Length: 381
Image 1: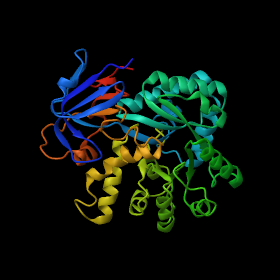
Image 2 (image 1 turned 135 degrees about the vertical axis):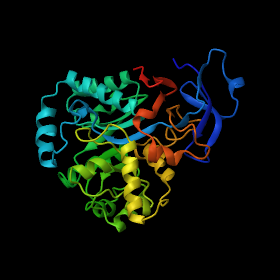
Image 3 (image 1 turned 90 degrees about the horizontal axis):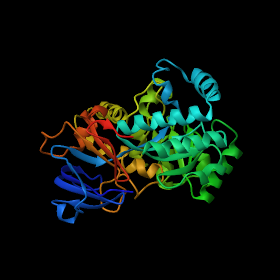
Image 4 (image 1 turned 60 degrees about the horizontal axis):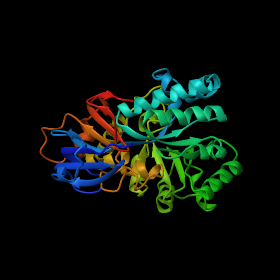
């Protein structure tokens, strides 16, 4: 049962308009019901009140691509090339994972994400390769308190996910397997009304367009070799695109194409991807992208740092099929919120400071669906 929560006197970064200093956020039944000054009169007498004086409230971060089951392998692949990753991680480690292991690993990964301010994760779940593994993964997400979109290996698993844990399809992709099989899976996902996620480099984009397979139902990850012209096709079709800049850099995928996609209007989102060589938060991809963009422009202010925050919130929600559900701090959306410390001395806008300066250690309190899952730097789940 959801308890009403009133966050008082916060500096709100709504994600869909000007920042709001000295603002309250009222959450009722898991939904944001009001955002504005002095909302105490609208709250129930039994409402939980959180004093957010000096804190920054943003929408919870959306990690649009992560292999959550790899959480126990954190740090095991600092110098691991893709050739070894396929053999040691997607081969030996995955094959040795029992259903119970898959559940424990997923729970660990979900908690690490929540602790870092990720309230929604798209789990490209290689671990859902049997009904028993799938049940364990879904149960772990339900227990964790996080919002999850689970990319299942098998369409038959879609019925297992409901409520805060929803389903999608994860496929090998047209560049790493049989084209006809991938195309059939993409069409099937569109018929079922679910997102279909695939790893791609980019050469397949033109053919996907020509065969009518692009669209909001399709999520393409990485795209390091996509051309500017093909990026426009992705933008025009509304295809979801996700980049994982830090992993792409250290594992030899190539440079991030965030800028190329953004210039085409494709609204890229961010993903952690794997934690074998990467921290489990989105602050690092945000800063990595900012640095890369500033090096390209030679400017100290272009692009504006605050603009990138949308990739971890509003655009992330679009990329996982949850547009209008999460990703902003506005009435009617689900109450997935971050309370960030360390910026209370700033009088102006704070979105840019969140991107350029905040780390996971500044995530003070986290709400998912109106439930406090982290309070004063301590996880409660």
